[in-house]
Image 1 (cartoon, rainbow, N blue to C red):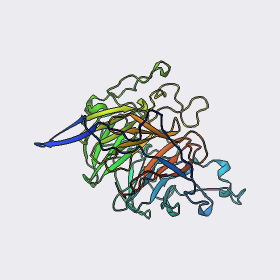
Image 2: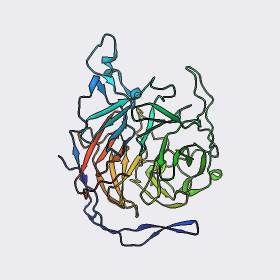
Image 3: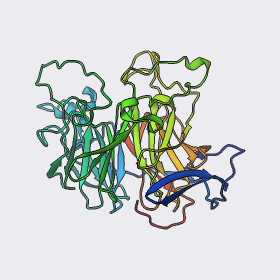
Image 4: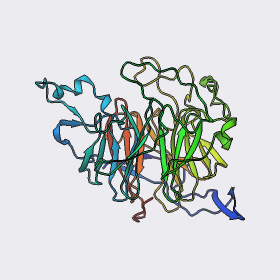
Length: 418
């Protein structure tokens, strides 16, 4: 196995940082960053496991873009494989008669075990009448139910059994265009919580509180996990929904320095995760920023990631842009395996690597990988997750189109399901 973690010479393996202490008194929650001695936790070190997943897949299936990867309480790894990204030179086995051996798009929901065996596969066009053209986010709850969402007109959030049986629709959908129909252009309204006309791009579950967290436009929205009733929401730095601008965030000249300071969220908001101490972390790609909140929406602190990288503006290309690269560094993240989750591991699909930051100080303390297409490298990294022993799984989109496993080499060997 090849070791691919790097550390700057000035980055100690063991370090002290600030801690987040939660205090509850008289039903009022106050959160502060206090100078405290933190337990010395080594920065995680990873090695590529090039044998994962096991290939070839059956039925000439070929994995496509993997925007999100997640793990469940059986230590199984779930990945979205977006079938619409199949290219003509990858689809020769789909014609009648086949014009070549390669290939057929894999089903859009893939379940692997930690050894890389494909356990189950289902989903894709025709699986359900509301199945989206491009699924974006997948979460598997403690009961083994599979939640899937997508961004697009008329798309939303659905719950399935682990075998793919439809169980529940979240609702809050806008109209879905009929084939060939052109709907009016969407007008941003950050106070609208009943209808989500452009679908559910990114969500996460708080099963202890039975809540669904959704990031949409420039805001965080929270709904009841069982009834889909809206409960609360906030914008950048905890501002009320009515204070969020419906105008576009102004571009900036990245050549002159990092993004200017903003109270507003700057889209795209690209991930949301909840730490073991109940803090809500939001990936703000349009500002190279991670903002941290209490579950009530109180802003705690924030930090930037690879902030020299362009975050937004006219020189930010879409997928496949012939002139400009993508922008923003905070595509997704996960928390380190140690009991207190000392670090965050941040997937950066623009710089094609994983950054390791101290969760409490925000300081960068390491990095994993390098740009490229060989095992252990990244190209358009988007998905990231850990299993209960801290092994890391990643997914790549656009022309990356793969999932990889990295073994944690300096963990404590304790199984922790989050």
